[in-house]
Amino acid sequence: MKSRNPKVYKASLACLTFTIMTLGLTLMSCDTGAGAKPSCVVEFDYGEGGGTPPSYITVDQDSYTTLPDQQDMTPPTGKVLSGWKDPNNQYTYNPRTDYKVISDVKLTAQWRDSKAPVYTVTFGLNGGNGVAPASIGNAVPGNVITLPDQGHMLAPAAKAFDGWSVNGNPYPARALYLITTSNITINARWKDSGNPAPSVTYYTVIFDRTGGNGSPPSPITVEAGKSITIPGQGGMTASGLTFSGWSPDPEDDDAPVYIPGESFTPTGSITLYAWWTIAIYTVTFNANGGTNAPPAQTVEAGESITLPDQGNMRYGDRTFGYVWCTSSSGTGTVYECGYSFTPTRNITFYAIWYEDDNTPGNGTPDKPTGLTITAISSTSILLSWDAVDGATSYNVYHRSSDSSIYDFVGDTKSTNFIDTGLTPATAYYYRVSAVNRAGESDAVGPAKPVSTF
Image 1 (cartoon, rainbow, N blue to C red):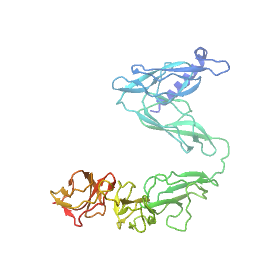
Image 2: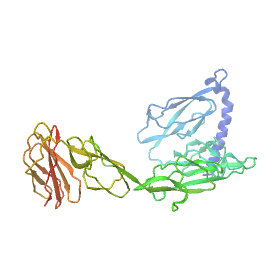
Image 3: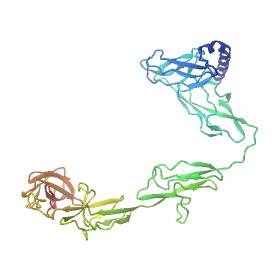
Image 4: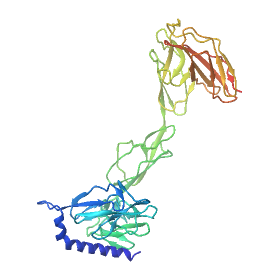
């Protein structure tokens, strides 16, 4: 393996010599605008494939361009793009690698079996800092890549970038490297810069979610004496708790808590822990057109409140339905007064009112009478009632014996209704109301439940 890579390096030097020798010939095919560096055109041919090859690229002579991937080309059956062949040096360059343009050129697509093995070339910092060049995936054995320059890597103290090391062999930046049949990490090489190393100390601030869920913010490294901005909650959550900031001690209530957005200057490497406090929820009551709604209540997460009754709340001559709804229209979840409710967030309840004028055709209809309820199977219950003057339809509600919430089951224009899909051997309570254009009557039902078989 070691004996092949130096040959490629020598070949790249030979290619450079060839380029220098032929510059006199190739410059004439480049655009040599007056006073400007000559520009060259790189074209692409799909070779044995089809479709549309990548658009041509115009770049300055002796500069680099990144070669495209397959894009809109159509590969031969069972094949994928392998790389781009240079007619000048006969090398096939891996897609997405840098390519030095020395003259106008047409690169031809090379295709490989889609199941042929490919490998990954990774670049290591080798003691440096910053960001290493991106790895090259789908590296095809026999192709070449151009080794990158220093890019965003930062040299260790008193060092300077000196190319790359491949299995102990030195390569300069921008040399060609022949891909082999294995994954490989190519490490940066550093040499003495001749400058004394500055005395700089760095501290790292690590963030711990303290028993929460999700990912905490990434660690922050900062030069001693400089500040960081305290990050926010990000994607962290904790059931029933509210994020309040970051503390150096999650067990000490007297420890400082740093608030997101404020400046923090570490005096050494430190771990800051998410500071969670018990969530406080507010339950608000809206008179929904009336006045004197009950006051809002606040409660800690996990604790309950008792939904209030009418109190001093009034709405003209309308009658309070002794229920609260999660929507002002009455289409949300309905809870009876006196129900023990455990909030999981801030929430507003709306009073439900009924018209007092029950004159048929003029106001809301009378409440139904003569309601009978009979279980007819293990999953069905039959309801029937007397017709109500002025009613155009009827709404049916039920709740199981272990719930205090009446759910809307359905509506009907007749005076009977079959409630289906019930749980066997379960007791259900029912209420039925009459409806017309003016609104809905009080919902009525027997005090005793009816059980399915």
